[in-house]
Image (cartoon, rainbow, N blue to C red; front, side, top):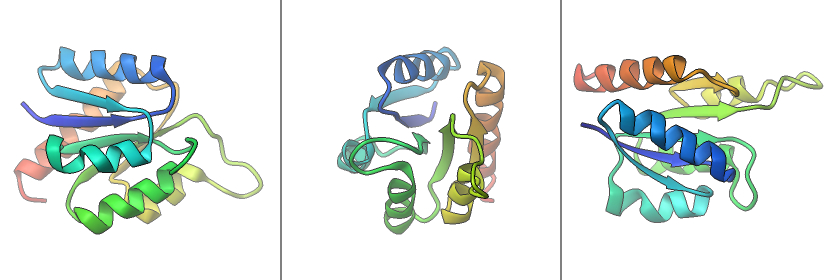
Length: 127
């Protein structure tokens, strides 16, 4: 059983992702932004973080950078409903900053579970 920290400013998204994660047997903890994510990092000790990009306060890109600084090998999945605009692809940018995987919202439960399992399996294998 892995510990997965979910970071999103939308309550419905947090609740939905927690339900998906817990249905697979993992332990989930949800917070509403980057600052609470970093505050819970040491006490929850996640194996994986799932974060949104656009959030008030500390947004996802900054959260990813700080997670990478504190825990270079932590698996990170980015979820975002933002589509590329004006030549900016936010999901690609998130991966460039250190996200392990990026997924567009809305994401199917199967796609999310597959991404989580792939990253956790890779971590267990030491990759």
